[in-house]
Amino acid sequence: MAYVLASPIPEALGIRVFEKVSEIRNNPDIMQHADAIVRLLCEISEVTLNYYFLRPLDLIHAGNFGQRLVTMGIQTSVGLTRTTSGRLLRQMDSTQLLKFAQWVEDTIVIEQSGRYMLACPVGPGDAEMVFEVVRKIRKNPVKHIHTDQTVNAAVEITRISLNHFAIEPLNLMRVGAFGHKLVDMAIHAGLGILRMTGPKLVNPLEGEDLIAFAGFFEGLMVPVDQYSFQKHFEVTSTRSNPS
Image (cartoon, rainbow, N blue to C red; front, side, top):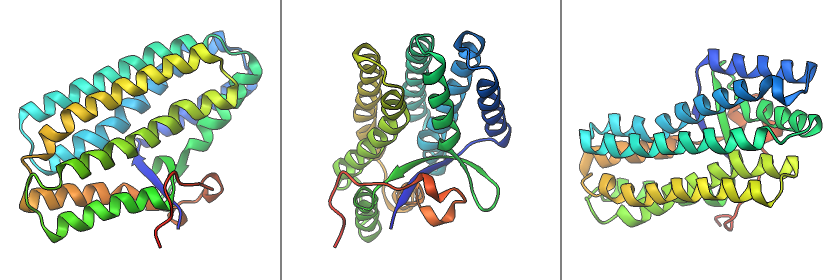
């Protein structure tokens, strides 16, 4: 079964993205759209990262220290998005801009219930990695013993998401080595912050809080057939499929 890593975005934001895609198709001149696109990308990044990282902290009633660490990471990632996307967008010609617009449109899907979602394809092997961590936590929700595996799974899923949202559009647009280097730096910075803060946040969790965290983690993996635009999610996994 194929899965997507899914996070909801506000309907108004989804509509604004589709409106901007339509404007680009009518006039594919990057200088007319660059600033608006950067603002949209930063808003999408902030909404998505808040959902991935701040929402689970709210569920487990994490303290101010954990909130501050994660907020710092989110602000760093959004700042890097603003810097790198601004530089790369202004280098695009009309053909590249149209390809980028198509990719953005395909990345935002609509649930059968009507919710707007930002979705990243995840192979069954990668989803199984998450499910294995969740099963172990539910079987024995004791603090410390699941930290390394949980953080490693979170880092891997984040890496998959960042590669999909950052590297894939560069490949579609045939952006050169300099552009790839900028984005790689941003991805490594974000993953480094997650590796640093993850153990501090997961280590204290136990019992119901740890189970609640596992439930949220599991809920990020959504089967493709729950979405109306299934054609976008023909995925392969970087891991072997579970037997």
